Length: 382
Image (tube, rainbow, N blue to C red; front, side, top):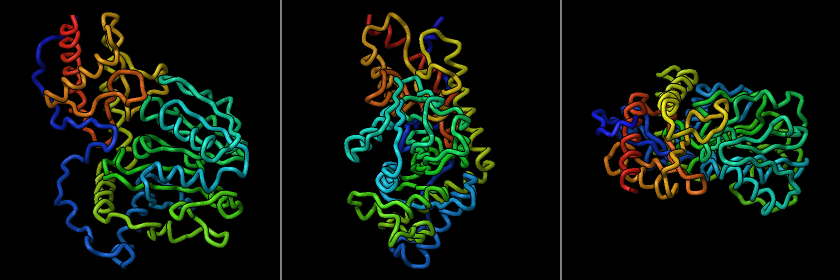
């Protein structure tokens, strides 16, 4: 039976946006007081801050010592496109997509780069069959579908002796999921996702195999300045030591450093993963006990632990899209859940960000409000 009473508890932080995401617990602007504002990022103080951000990224994510880490412009989108524009074309390509951002990379490969790529797609809620993928080709995919709530469960299907590169958009996975570095050659993310950093900056991580590709392959296409990773056939090493391609915001860099230090304080990568897992479990436990709502991910093994997507399944709902929007609006009006609507290209429903900066107590407090809003809206449509 549905609980129609107004819940007593409220989330202390109602921010469940899937990007930019919730700031770290206890966040305040005083934490950024050490930011070198008004100073050049090329001065020693700026370079040191950027190098610190890179070193902390390596430490928290447990990135192998021989992988390069660079801070690049254009958020995760800039990082992915930088990799695609500079590396693809040397070998045949497979593009994998099961949500909107993966679809965007397919468009880039086929319509912009005009590659004769093999495209494998799955509907929202599903994932492509990795056993059918030819990893002797270059393969581009998202680790976690931010708009579908479907993730790669592990890297077991990626062979260690692959001939092609694996280019992985991990923007809503990095810091919350276990990424198998030996199976990934290019990894990208934006720190505005799992660590709740500010937008506009991306991170590009390259394996030695990816560096070899960059130094041995010159694509037959114009490359904008902000995409150029080599000079004279050699990797521009400065990019991976804090000498960014364009001017970064030192305020945003300081914000990222603060978040990384917080990550260390909660147990590093294992602690971050545990926090996201607990948040996702709080949603799953609620959904499992109700027949009017379900996870969009059809296979629990592929269900995201960060961007958890839900759909309403009650047959009495007359207009799925309108109903879901109304529920989200009702929750926002009450101030208990902000930015909970599904992505515009995704099936109608809700999307709850459960990344590592979110407190499990807030997720648990949110769930009865969803039931309350559902019942209220169901009654309103009659």
